[in-house]
Length: 254
Length: 241
Image (cartoon, rainbow over all chains, first blue to last red; front, side):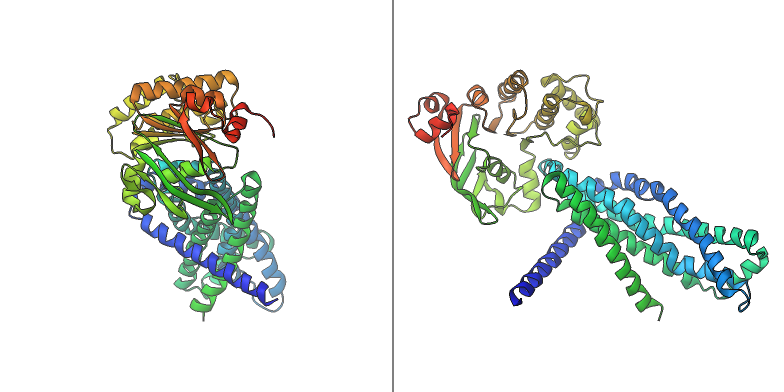
């Protein structure tokens, strides 16, 4: 029993060491702008633009559901213009960043881990090194920068879509007027609602791409290893998103 | 000159290399033969610093590879072309971009890069295939692109990891001829790792057999063919135990 605990502790320390080492290598690669600069826009398109349909779809339906559930809860007890308050606050503070983050952990994180894992097991990463490229500059830095910068943009658009569909639902099904919905939306709004959600999204983007890169570049063992990395990247990213969500709430919303 | 100096490497307690010592002279093609899993590719990867030795080192032109800082290691790597077992081409890039990638790292002008890419593709008889992607190529063509990527760098050394593995005899002969042609045309020093004896006899100046982590025998092609060492004889004749 004690031996098993000891082994677990040692493996955790090793994993922390690997992460630390990876982060240090990445930091060292950041000044190599000539290498990563040529790939960052490609990654921004893949991570950001190509993720928009999924993010919009999720946000659109979330807005509808929020409005309907708020109306169901408030009916007869709370003025219905509070539907706007609930839709706005929920989308900005929590559901926009969280649902889009979790969805993109699958779409972006898993595909990135699979791509890098395949490159690793087919020796493409070794080939980069023999051509005197730093894999961190070539593969990791552009992905992490693109993830960190594009996630807030995707989430911002998603929040807008979610509020938009919540508004349309309120007009069409709840018999609220636009001024009533907007009144609710503005009621408890503070600017922090906006930057809090976007800051959180940036941290999710950083976490998802970092996890995908670490896991992908640690892949061993052919197709089976790539499959394992893909699953691991998605699971680890989802866990990290939940932990970061709790962390930001505990530190900034008290 | 490339010198393996008592190189040792273990993976998970399994000693793959156990004091490998071998010198590759300038201008020669050294073929390292041995059974699968005996550490031939592992030895090759130490030359370019892809692996760190547990003991000993590889010394290239007086530079002990494992002690080099990143900048010095990159400088060393610019002297070495590496042809991977399965070519290790970048799937998302065309043949031209694959061959040009290493050149772009060297701050060459676009004209010079184009010229060198065209020359390298001509050497491997792939002129006209520049716009194709690796997925559109046969195994033999992929290996030739891998060779083109290495020779475009005009390196002092080329390392070939199992260059004929998985190819039919005719395509293997094409690759062998290419290795010989590359040495004659560019005068490079080469290390070829293989267990294909026909290929070893065709391309090698000297042959070294790696066995149980060390060099069992090293000599010219004629010397190895005439060996009386039972382990080497069994391997080169392909006799089961």
